[in-house]
Image (cartoon, rainbow, N blue to C red; front, top):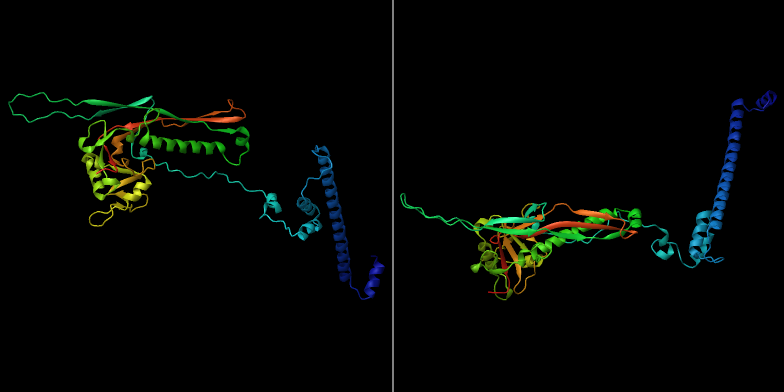
Length: 392
């Protein structure tokens, strides 16, 4: 604006400050219009580039069936809506009463990616084992020998000047526990190992270790000793009144399988006093349910729960190990064991679990060959007593 025009506007009653303010306002209005025009052109350019990219990809892609549109109607409408923001394509669906929803797979649920857990929830299995109360030794050889002195030294009273007679010498017995091999060999494809959302190898290792724990727990109780540990129930059981070394003694539970409080008392005191201080009951959950109902002559339950957190339940003051591999109560079953297992049963093992990763033998799969060496057997036949059900 020239000086003459400015003075003319002053003459009209418009001050210079107001004139400057009006000029700035006009400039800002024109600038915003220019900015909006630029943004519109940039958006149109981006859309053209995107369409060109799509056309080039479509032209390069081989067609399985030329001229046939295999896209579902709701998918075409949804894609059109995402590209243009126009909901005309969706109105056809609304007229049919089909609204897009993730609640129904065919109405949009397939369009939403699921989130995969980073772990696998496995079914819980009981792996309680008598190794928790047994004597466990680590060895590097193929077997472990337990030397047992179950005899006694002869002794007698003598006079001061009388002749001394030769006394009996104790005999040493040897129990050999071979180490058997426990093995597993699962496999997984290399692509699964590479692309999985979680650690497949770690999961397999955990599953193998869990299976090994359950397999050896069963063998420590019922194993026949052929290429596996020998369980204590695999040894011959005789009436405790006629017990001899090499056998396990038992006491009867009562006629027709009835379990009484008196039978539990008989089982406890069938074990020698030198073993009772460190003794433990072993039974499965079903038998524990029967024992938990037993009362003494004064109406008090024989079973008592631990008073502190983590303290095991006690039966007549002795801890109870729930081992599901023990047999159920039935005629002629040995369903309850009581003894000092730290002296009565020995577990010998090589402590390492070895896993060999083999990606070559079964391509494109990877084999995981896992092995563990472990053995077990009764090491003191006087330290464990059994209850036999179903006899008087």
